[in-house]
Amino acid sequence: MIDKIKEPLLQFNLREILKMSDIYSLSILCIYTILAIIFSPYIDGSITLIYINIIIMAGIISIATIDEKFQAGRLFTLFRRVYIAPLIFIVYDQIQNYIPMINPNLYDLTLISWDMAIFGVNPTEWIYQFASPALTEFMQSSYMLYFFMPLAHGIELHLKHEDKKLGEFSRSILFAFYTSYLLYFFMPAIGPRFFIHDFFAMSTELPGLYLTEFFRNVVNSGGGIPAGVMNPADFVNRDCMPSGHTMVTLVNIYVVFRNKSIFRYPILIFGLSLIISTIYLRYHYAVDVMAGAMFAVIAIYIEPKVRLFVKEKLNFKNA
Image 1: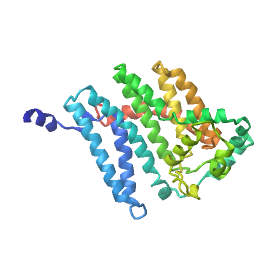
Image 2 (image 1 turned 90 degrees about the horizontal axis):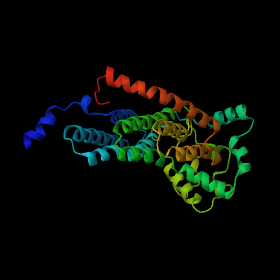
Image 3 (image 1 turned 180 degrees about the vertical axis):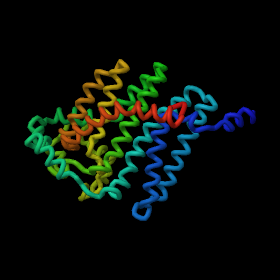
């Protein structure tokens, strides 16, 4: 029994066990850990962040080892695939510690000027003419499907035992998520609901029907705004440029149509609605959305090339 356990461990080699999704997650956590070390005097709880990252990285490697070396079964393989979902939240939440350290400026006024130069109006003000409680309810609900639409296709592929397609899908989505997070460093912004509109008037200017207010509070909380604060702009995450919602959603739409998913048309409808909702709900400037679309195309193009480089040049056989 001991020999059966020892043999795989003696053959332990990261290049043989890590999939590309593992490599992407480990890479961004390494970047975060380096930033936490560099800026430790200026970030509250930096030591805790470092420990958390090390534990998560060790967990990723351990899960990969058990799955690849010990053939733990399909249920464990499913766990290896689904742990990515909460990890995306952790990675998103943590990056907000480092953005002000590297780029303390806000670029909202620049983004507003670009919108005005392109459209001649502020798109969030222009689209307000179409507002209604029913439309707001639909838009806010569509916005909340951001994480669930990729999850739906991932579950579909798992149930169909289409492991190769699932691996490709996971890589594409993770690459889009993590790339969007890193791009926030270049032009931090907090959005038109603070710079153009009155944040505290959102509920009266854009009322919904039943779920809008609840969903809006969930978004605010997830975006770093504590309940009841008088200065929410000081707390909100600086994550507007580019629009990660647009970037990830377009990558998702592309993949579900390539895979002929049974969800492709609902995802197309709700995905495009989500993209429009980022402007309608005043979370993004139009140029954020345009940049998100551009980077989605770039991500779709370069991710396979990144994977090929890692697999062939760096010799990660399982990538």
